[in-house]
Image (tube, rainbow, N blue to C red; front, side, top):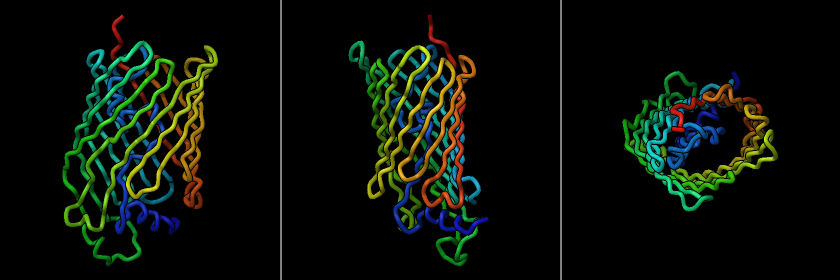
Length: 297
């Protein structure tokens, strides 16, 4: 095992400076509700409900590397009202975050071409720092003497989305508004919340080929801007392939397949381009989307 993971763990936890507890994932076009409650009630044509399960394992081979598990449920309650549910578990080194939230969105049709949706999120989270079983430089450091937990904390979030029938969309969201804290331990650990900016479109070349470029940016106070771009091509009615790039972080290859009218499988392989490429060269993200509740004919 390479010694570099010790440094990486401290960078992840950032015990002496501002840090972020934020879900990092790439297949946001498959599962956009994670980052914005405004997508509640929006899904593939022909259905009014879907369930998505996602597993992201980052920097394989490094002890304490980040991992994200998520399950979302998304459905259309009425033509203008959508609901959603989110279960999320993030782990990075000794840091574990568990989240459960519910979403409600209202959809408005401005005219035959443009529509808008606004959503709110209510949920609870638990943040825990567990130092048992990890190797550190100074095991006598008082900061690492005891595990820390926030207990269950309430939180809220919001999002707005604009959509054109030609395929263009743009959204602005803050999936959580309140920062996490550890009470008296907050002087050593400070959290920030993120604003998400997401946009994309679909360009149809013919009945057998279309391209879907998209962009995601994450902004927070006193934290460098994070952004990535994706380009996906759909060949025929069932196969997707594309490229992904996260600024100063990684390149990725993406594949997807509509296995049948109700099941879609997605996969991304990412290769780090930062200093992490010396200790790990692979990140895997998989997702399964199950479409349910057919729309009335």
